[in-house]
Image (cartoon, rainbow, N blue to C red):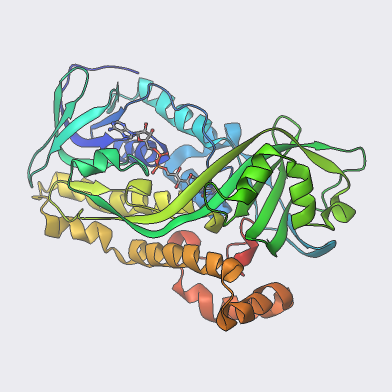
Length: 407
Ligand SMILES: Cc1cc2nc3c(=O)[nH]c(=O)nc-3n(C[C@H](O)[C@H](O)[C@H](O)COP(=O)(O)OP(=O)(O)OC[C@H]3O[C@@H](n4cnc5c(N)ncnc54)[C@H](O)[C@@H]3O)c2cc1C
């Protein structure tokens, strides 16, 4: 990382994951000076978003990231929704798959030659926040940086947020577990489209995506509502994962031909949570630092982008007009109409999707029949006439493919 002796910036961004890196990229293109501080020199490989919606990729392109995205992103031109042994329909919305950590590193690399962005590989120890000037103290060097605004993009961890007086409200504890794994395919293996989404809807499992990788193999993401430590999770990771998949989707191989799970299984278990106590002067929370939604909703990156787009409209003006960044002023970010509508939608969707799979109340049983046994055309009609109106900018169309339960 390029170190600088400069200590004064327009914006100090803490956390260089996808949220912090995108924010730094965007602000620097708007002419602001930025310090991007992350405790890690480079993002290490991590299991996260492996499939990104076309809407999110489209927004990244509009932010000027086309050439970087094109280096990694493998377009999935079509997705077959498979139920039992039947292809219910084939969608033509293009989703993308790429390793998120590589994208993050590639964005960070561009800052090496960007005089507006200073990358600092250090852990932030503390922040002093005031309406007009913020100071951030780095842990190892004890160096102090100042800026007009602090953007906190430290992800889902609570450790750093605590010292800002920000707490995490758990909305749904131990909400879901997502698995990523490679497939070893038999000679007759076949996907009826570029990728498939298998609707499972049984035993706490929602759906599974199978898609090709840029290395020429196949990969799968399984989305379940198994809590961390659940017996089913243990059985899947430690015993016979292929047998578990055959139990969850007994007729799938009639469509795809034979495959088996190969190598290590990666797993991410999450609680759905939102921050509280952030209504203070001097800093804003973005991405998972503001709140974590369920990966089954497949919209984490869209949420990150919506936060960055909202700040893009506000921050350059605040800096140019030397606005005092009081808690009241910063509310215009949290309550911006599109951002707020999207936030409300993704959190609600995280809970609704789970209830639809795991709850056994009469209402949820009826919903299961509605969502999983009625023909897709009925869902299309419902979505187009009622639901779509509520979705914000980066979710303006019906989310296809990445989550069939959205219909
Ligand atoms: C298992 C799983 C699967 C997912 N799948 C999808 C998907 O398919 N599609 C989708 O759209 N979304 C998905 N998501 C959601 C998406 O990955 C996240 O919403 C997104 O990565 C959050 O990015 P972030 O930058 O806010 O946080 P992070 O990626 O967690 O970045 C936080 C950064 O802050 C740094 N940091 C933390 N504390 C400090 C400190 N004190 N000082 C300095 N640096 C610090 C860390 O080193 C890290 O680099 C998934 C999430 C999970 C858990």
